Image (cartoon, rainbow, N blue to C red; front, side, top):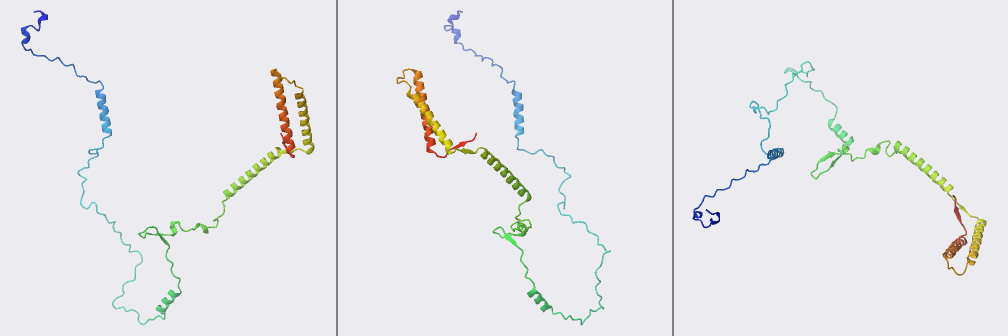
Length: 255
């Protein structure tokens, strides 16, 4: 039969059983057992429910009758060797009659109460609305320390520290005064001031004379530079002269 005539063949009309292709083997990870062990460990570590694994009590240790009742201490034997009280008088013995005391107990008690000092109440304090009372002496609210002999006296170590601080401050002040004395400014006398002023004026005249001798045309760079330099020197000398003339008293810092 020609394979090109499948659609035209009558045999194709007969239904055939379709066989399903075989399934491939199921994939199983090689880390399955490792993951399973890790999950068991983590679950066991976080497990909080269930009966606790404790030692089961023995059946012999059941609760017995009167086991929770308090037991009395053992009785002590009486010591008959000690002193005894006088015996009870007999029936035939009679008390001494007719003995009277001259003391007036009523007046004596009244006089003791009148002449006695009134009893002072115990100092207390209340810290709640319900009226809870507490001893005031042991509470720390009473200023007992002011009655001490050394109360208010500066301790010895503080006095010593203050003396050391005072001594260090005096040494520092002396050091500062010595440095100020060494770096003190010197005042110029009138003769020195006049001599400096005349010297500055003389220098200005020399620079001015040199400036006047310059050529009128500054057509080269060296001429321009020289002219600019002489102008700056004249300005500086004029500034110095005006400062010395303005201030009569001048101080010079020592080197």
